[in-house]
Each structure stands twice: as C-alpha cells, then as structure tokens.
Image 1 (cartoon, protein in one colour):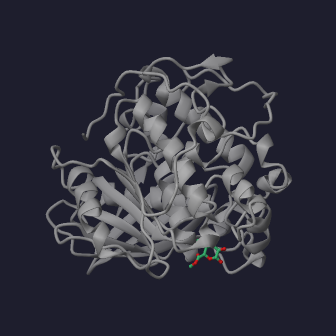
Image 2 (cartoon, helix red, strand yellow; image 1 turned 90 degrees about the horizontal axis):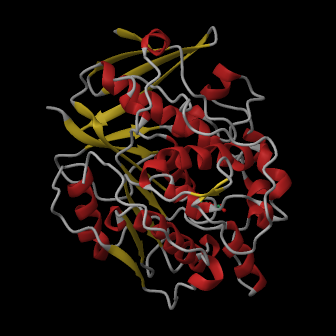
Length: 409
Ligand code: MCU
C-alpha cells in the first residue's frame, strides 16, 4: 500500500506556466486552474444562438483565440462553462489516494476533506507496463490483446437508476449528497482516481496510455471522462447519443422535424447524469454558451473515436452527425484532424459493435495506446443520408491555430 500526498506536492510545485498542467506535478492528480489563464468575467453576457456556439471565442479575453498556445486556457475556459451550466463542479484535487494491487484487483482509497471512500476495479490482460482501456460497466467494443481491460463499476461512484439517484454513490459519500456534480462528472472523478492509483502501484499498466469507453449512458460518461481527465489518451464513447455526442440545439431542431429524439428537457426528467444547474437551461438551450461539439473538443488534441448508430432515432442520429462534424473543426483548427474519428453505422442493436468498424477502432487503439505513430486514423463517416450543414450549425470561421504540442502523435 502506498500513499501519495498530492497536496504536499502541490505546495512544493512552483507556479509554472506549463502548456499542459499534468506536466506540472508528476504522478499526481493535479487539476488546479492555471494561474496564468485569464479569469472568466462574473457576468458572461451570453448571446443566445440557434447555431452551435463558436468554440474559439474566449469570454475571458473578449475575443477569439488565434494560436494553439492559447488552447490550454481555452479548453480550461470551456471546462468551467460546462461545469457551471451542465456538469457541476469537478473536484480539482484530492488530499491523498492509497492504492494496492493484488490478483487483478486494484483497490483505491480516496481521502479528502476528512472523509474517505474505497472502491476497486478489476484488471485483466495487463502486465509489463501495458496500455489499458477503462470500461464503464463492461466493454462493448473489441479490445485487442496487448491492451488490458479495466472494468469500472461507475454506478458505485454515482448511481443512475432514475431521478431518485441524485446524490447517491461513493462520490457523494465523500463530498456530500448536495454536491453540484451530476453522475457523469462524478464518474470522471473516479477515472481520475483510477489513474492516480495506476501511477502509484505497479498493476502492470502504463498510466500514460489509458483509454476510456462505455456505451449509451456510459458512452456519455466516456466522453465526459475524456473531456475532464486530461491524462486519458484515447476516448471511445459508443452510442452516447443525447448528452454525449449529440448537440442539444440540433436535437431540439430534430424534434421540431417530428422525430422522436431525446432532448435536454427530457433528459433531466429521466436521470441524474447532469448537474441540477442544467435544469434552468433545458427549455432554452440556445442560451447555453456551450454545446457538445465543445465537449468533444475538450478532448483535443488527445485521441477520440466516436461511435454512433443510425438505427437509433432516440439517440439523435442527425444530431450526433452534425455535432461531431462541428467538433472535428476544433481538431482541424489545432492541426490534428486525424486525432478525431466519427463513425456512424446502423443495422445492428444498441451497443452491438458492428465488425465493419473493426479496422477503425483498431487504428485508433494502435495509434493512441500502442504508440504506432504512422497508423492512419482519418475517419469521418455515416451510413445515414446526412450532409454536414456547416452554415446552419457552425457558421464561424475555423482559424488555423498552428499545431498544438502533443506527446503522442
Ligand atoms: C443512449 O443512452 C441512454 C439514453 O439517454 C436513455 O434515454 C435511454 O433510456 O437509455 C440509454 C441507455 O443508456 O441505454 C442502455
């Protein structure tokens, strides 16, 4: 059992204007706001917009960003907006994490604010510093040999039975049932702690090569974990639909076209995935300063392969297509278009991975978890009859920000 005191390291860490904050404190769960990022004004003056908000506009600066060196602060600003409008607070640091590993079980104790909680995940197929994929619930994608599977019972961290699950689960045992975080945020916090634990004990896993996946409600979770946990190298949200790869604005528009699609106003009546802060916006999503192209964009420049299913009307097939095409523009602006893939194939049941996507997912895993830098990961496709309507949904200019520095390409 090893204890790792993040707060001690934080105190010792000089205030470095590092391009990526994980590099400030090694092996830690540091997620402090960058002191050198311009602060968000207390009054945002959000302009209502029926198209997707401009992801390059900085409220803190009062203008658009123009260079990749500004991306870290912009990503951080977008995170603050998501926390404030949809997700609730993502606890920045924890006091300490204790971890032990034995017989395929990684046991994790998190101590914070005078409380502690314990949870464990099971690891199969690791060893010798292998990469791994954290699967929410169970994996419903093919995971190749050479890549371990870490099974994460995310429901233990935050329950998701129905709206009565609000404030239930280990996250809330630690932080109180009134904490603003919705379940998606609480699960991402759990992922952050799993990586803390992998950094502390030798569980046969390389903590710098960890992906995350989940399907459906857990697919929403996988996208949010990729967005909030910057130590995740590859996000693979599968059939996440509304609340994940769909944009609220496009889903509302689809509903006006007579489709039976999940919208913001419905989703908060179904479950506790989002913070209660979101409730006041669901009937007027045009007033949100964000939409989910920006959630997916927060993963940039890290790897992301988004899987959707054209046969599921409820997920918002058109919405995820438009939304993820807009997200791809964020990767494009950063000069890393091929770090993002979108693949939408129907004709199969929900959460059943069709074999025709095998080569795509393999490519993303090979490139971002198995360090095969030369593998081609250009994927943007749908078997639906859709065209990206950029002038309707993403009418802003895509700047050439220059390439953002990345470790894994
Ligand atoms: C696609 O994710 C959800 C969806 O948001 C819900 O409306 C539906 O009830 O359940 C889906 C799911 O998680 O299916 C397993």
